[in-house]
Length: 271
Image (cartoon, rainbow, N blue to C red; front, side, top):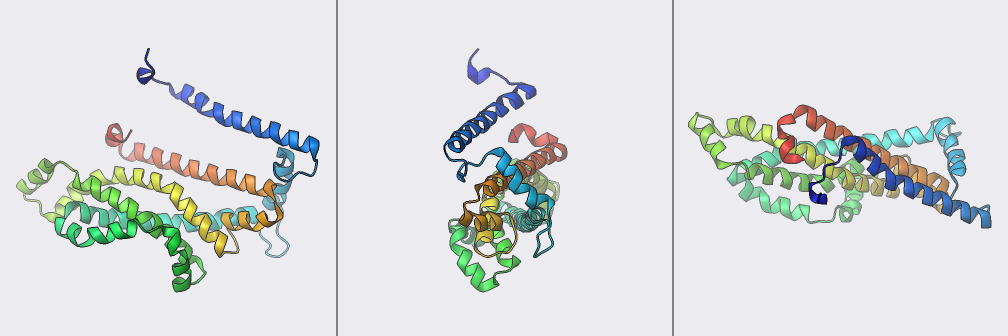
């Protein structure tokens, strides 16, 4: 049987997908053990026991200065910023995407502006945001929203603009106006696409979050990583990076599950 025709069961996909991850973990353990056999105080590749010891104080012990459990405080702060940024970007992408995709006059006026904003590297705007909005939460949330909203918006607008013209004509034949077409025809078909757009935006959103926290913050996952790097604390950095990856995977799985539950009729086109 040709590989292009071979279908993999769900259980086999989980097994095959876990294999390379386990292989990387084993390779890391062997490499770390080899370095520690030569230099027991090596900090570059900490052993799992060393990472567990370093993380236990951050997870289970209160900080002497703040009185917080630092690991959970960092996680909560980062998730709040990420959630606000994603929420704002999603709302902007949905509303403007519908307008640009379905209404040619709006597309003619705002299309060039959206394209110009989308090609600007968001990280280049970080100093401007910090100067204009200060070093607080607003600038961090704004960077996430500005970084991902234009790309999501263009994706939604393109999807709506590509809807079969026959649907628009039939709706108009039945007496639907522009706003009714937006709400009754375009919106239901844009929502499944929106879930996919958010999933694709998760990676860049995390990048913008970590970048903003690294520059100006006193709590957060990115802040902690860049704080301890000056001490070469790889026993903290590696678990934090792994935790960020797990959070991102959990969010992606939740969005995929939500899309399947809410829009089962659209899964043939999206998967």
